[in-house]
Structure formats: structure tokens, C-alpha cells
Image 1: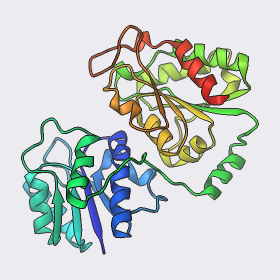
Image 2 (image 1 turned 30 degrees about the horizontal axis):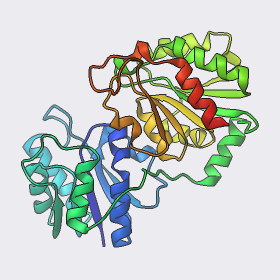
Image 3 (image 1 turned 180 degrees about the vertical axis):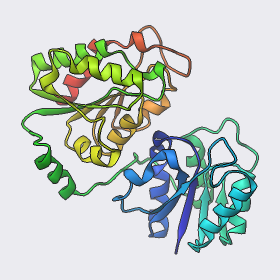
Length: 320
């Protein structure tokens, strides 16, 4: 049996959040599931060793119709790309008539999909849970899980001379937008106080955006440089085994908070400007929100109010 799941949300975090539902389908039918996901999910870089995932099919569809799968002729190409795999079932995690028709024209016999034309107010956790409960009578309470080979993890320890006598900590200092990027001085306060209490090594994960690089360089040019390792020249695939060797992650709401938690690492999520559900959906996540508020959502703009002492207290609690 061949099964396809279609998840057309945008980013890495969105894909990771949906993994428990993909895994539940795989377990139900005792076969790995192929994924059709957008290219910027970068799923091929972190799911290539996960045993409930079969193939990653890239959905090359952006805002412009000139992308491979954009527009009418792009839809025809997508139908051809799907049809050649001869899937028996498809689970469509959206309400789009477009994807229903694509699945139908791809000659997939069994189509499971969110109710058509009900796109608005779909909850990223509750809606897929209800979908699989209604369609397959599945109760899902699992955390997302990404698997990587133990040999790869050991190989990385040797190549990078990672010392597990240290407390290795991932710092996810990047973010997809400026309101998600906690200032460098907050991270420097955390580094300073943790080093007073513990023998730590900090692995700095971020992107190439100019502001992200400024934050990175401010940390690397500090007195704590020798305790820090930059990861911005590495791919996600290369960073995964490094994360796996960490005792703890402290991350902005970013791809690395999601990846870290899915690898089973306890992750402090710094939620400055995103709905809280993106930072607490896993039992491995421990959210910190800005001082003076009770929850967080889009447009909170609270990056200057993330309390470094709260991060330190939670980090020491986890480490000890």
C-alpha cells in the first residue's frame, strides 16, 4: 500500500507540527507515508532517516503562477508527478478544492480530506486531530518525532570534537521575522550566568539575514567567544546530529525550536510575537513569554520584554 499526505503550509515548524498525524497514519496502515510539502519546508533535510516517512515530494508552488506547480499548467504537472507513484490513499490536510481535484485526477482511489470550503479558523493542532478521529477513529497525543541514526550522531561528536563532559546547549538565535529575534544582550546575559554555574558549550544556530548575522557577531565578539560555536555555515542536515548531542536548547520561535523538540531535546522557546501554541505543543517545549502579559500572539512585539533571568532559572532546572 502506498499512502500520500498533503500538507501545504509554509515552513519547517508547520511540517514538524503535523508529524504526529503522519506517524499515526503510518502506524494505522503499517506502512511509511510519503509527503507532499512545500520546498521551503526543507523536509528532505530532516526527515530522510525517519522510519514512518517514505518519499518527500516537493510542492513547487509560490505566490507566482510561473513556479513549477503554480497555475493551471502547474497543476497538470503536479498531477503527473503524483500519478507516477500510484498511491492508494491520500490524506489532504486542507480544505482546498484544488487539491481534491488533483488527487482525483491523479487516480488515487481513496481520498481523505478536511471538509471542503472551510479554510478559515482551522486550528493547527485541533483540526488535524479531529480530522483523523472522524476519518480513522484515531486518538493522537504524541509529540512530533524526528529520527536520526545513532552512528551519525557519534560521527558528529568525533568530527566536531564535541565534548559531552560539557553541557552542550543549542542557542537558536535566528527567526523568520524581526519581531521574533530576541536581542543579543538577552542571550549574552543567559550565557554569562550559565557559565557561572556550569561548564557549558553553546552552539549558535541562525540564518543569513543581516539582522541575524548582527546578533550572531555580537555574541561571537563578546568575552564568551571561546565558549561558542557558530553553525550558520552548516545545512540543517548537518546541524541535526549536533542538536541531538545537546542537553538543552534555548531558541527563538524558529525552525530550530521545532526541530530540537522533535529530536527529543528539552527546548526553552522564547515566544515574543507568535501564538503560544507554536511554542508549547510538545511536552519537550517550555515557553517563556514577555513580562507583563498572560499570553502571546501575532503583533505582541515583546522581544525586548523576554526576561533573561526566567530563561536562566528554567535552564538550570532542566540541566539539574
